[in-house]
Length: 148
Image 1 (cartoon, rainbow, N blue to C red):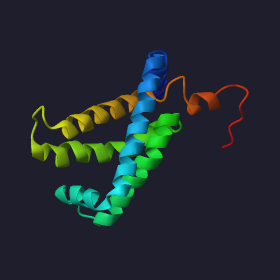
Image 2 (cartoon, rainbow, N blue to C red; image 1 turned 60 degrees about the horizontal axis):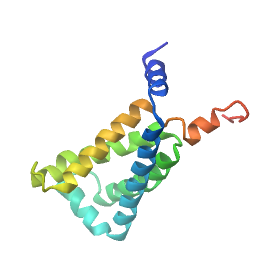
Image 3 (tube, one colour; image 1 turned 60 degrees about the vertical axis):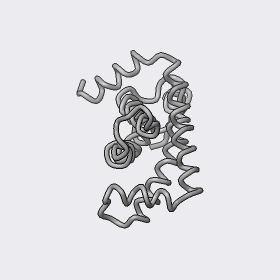
């Protein structure tokens, strides 16, 4: 059994159902943030400019918006959760360490704390996976034929 399989087995064995509700809420929160980014793309461009991102600002904006919309839905449904989470983690690392840290570590900086909590939850779900209440688990049932 290699390391990845051991991590997946540990995640399946230690996954209470209330964590699935937290995954669903996290997915909805990320999706809602994607909707808010669509409503105000200029503010997203301003946030990305603060990070001194070297590629095109608008390509980064499109990546962030697309990853939040699609990734949020996938995380909430529990479909390809680890892939969706892996696409979210670079965005949240940028949000925590490059955008929100400029305002400091004060307790009044609620955007920083929300970004930090979301980043920690994403890392957790990258390790443990989607859980028993997910489309990934439903597709692994014996009556379902997965087409590869």
